[in-house]
Length: 172
Length: 219
Image (cartoon, rainbow over all chains, first blue to last red; front, side, top):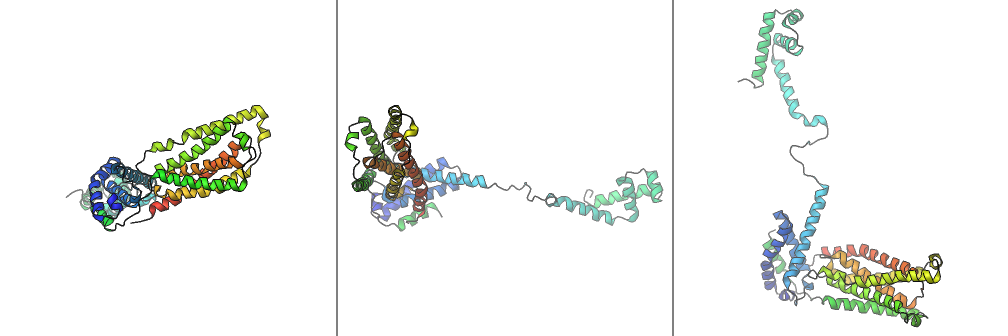
């Protein structure tokens, strides 16, 4: 380091490279995230570079390097936790928008498909399905309402349900 | 950027630097500066008329010596803490002197209470104390922080605190040499208050200064 203070670039290069494992160990001891720890090492190297005139050659270099690296690692941790307090990660399964309807896209697609499928049924099938399944009338009541015979209602309802199943992929 | 390449870049742009004086010498330099400044102020105002008689009272002497030691100790501690590898225990150096100083002032208050009667009679304003300690202490603290500007990336907080304390304690000691202030409660209030103000001011004004030094790229 004394040589580096005098401007010996080769000695400086050797010193920093030799110190790198030590600095990495110090940073990793504080910071779990490997990329963050490596950033802290680079912060430490920059600080070492800026403070190189404050190093006293009579004293051992190791505690000097370690102390600077510890400080930079702690600073980075603090910044990280400050950032962590302001931001929260967006998870895939969280609601993305506040409007209730905005998150129901899938349901809307499904109901649109169902409407389209119902629209493709014949008039008789649609009437039979509406009276027997949606309004829950008995076959006799449905027959009286629609003017269709009980047998025709049965057949129409059965065919309608079958057609819907086929259309919506429930039956191959 | 890979760290190995970063090292290459740092080494590639290396320029020789002038080695900084050891912390002991830095502290001595600043103490000399402070002593000179306070000495000039004392010369300008003239010593207080009852100084000789007060210097015969052991408690007064102990109080004054303690304030000087607190100032000197804080200055040395600040210079030491500005270096990354020095122990934080240096911060404890001025504590005993500070304790002695404040305890002797508190004791003086009690003694005055017994001697002179109720406190209300002794209270008064002494803006002069505040003005002197601030007017003298702020430049001294600024000189201190300039000397210790390399502390920014390492331990800015304790260095600012101790630097402000050193300036304030020495100004208070200097002030006691020429300013006539008898009641201990007044010294405690006005000197102590001015010191607290100066330490807080040093902290507030010094932080951005040291932070900007830390951010400055000398590479």
